[in-house]
Image (tube, rainbow, N blue to C red; front, side, top):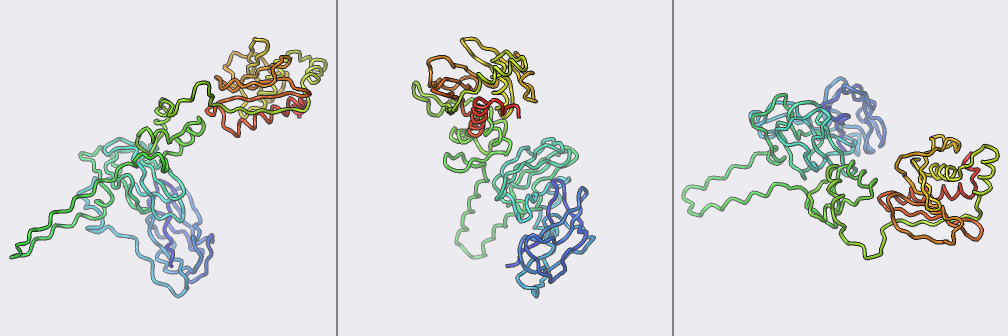
Length: 432
């Protein structure tokens, strides 16, 4: 089956591209990944690769021509003899596009091509309403392909004069989905793609002499609505909202379960934080991570004696804080608790123990030193900060990390405990 070669969209504000040169000739065999032609926009020149194996046929645009985004300019066919010309770029004809007087004048915003093999995109949601003022870098709408969901910017300053597709509709690459005008529109337009692409057929007149009553007009199907919240289906959210939810240990599906409309955006993160727990934890239960490590030996006493004698470092808590801070993925202040007293230390980026100093900053980690006490196992539950507890063992030490999922993801917690246990067992590795 022939594969159409289209003019790609290399930038959100790009409407057309100039073919600089063809790197393959009609009839040439091409493999997927071969460079077919060079295209130039106002910002870049780029080689466009073949997206299928076959033979280059039906070349309909020459070097030097400006071609609209999405227009078919060639085909990759199964045979070199299949040289039917590619269909010409669709021209604006009466009936195929809304009449000029139906739409305000302005700059069309087209469905972008997010991948070379992409033919269309699903318009997930509009971030601006018809008539709104927009800046060039304002997010106009979200589009979803089979590989990603992406926010599309307006590309220029002005007013959103018309929206030509509704949320949930599949729009071909290069087709106009909005119009941005320089002046505020008198009557902003909002229509679906179905209404934009074809006018409704006129009702047929009954034949003379036919007494059969005309069938009642079919009910107009309801306009597409935002996706219905689902507790079992996929959750639609912007990439930034997904990232923030992951970083903060939040579950976006709880918004869907609570009935909030999708897709979710950054502003919905605050709403998610205010939702009550779906299933209250039973009395005495904890919702924290708890990891335990054991060292074969306790290397701290010997290291601290050497540090005091060789370098004059006599503050044992500062040394502990420095070792702990260096074990964090993002080093921050560490509070050291010992014998009911707590002091907070800030470590330098260079990890030099001699530069660890007391600080008034809020700690990123609490280190509870219970060596010398009869306690061997602790399970205190989540606190305001992640807590690392040192307890004695038969030969070495037991090190326990407790934190909530919102404070630290699993991989970060594992890395912290592994790094700190290694530094406690062999403190000299900190100096390497």
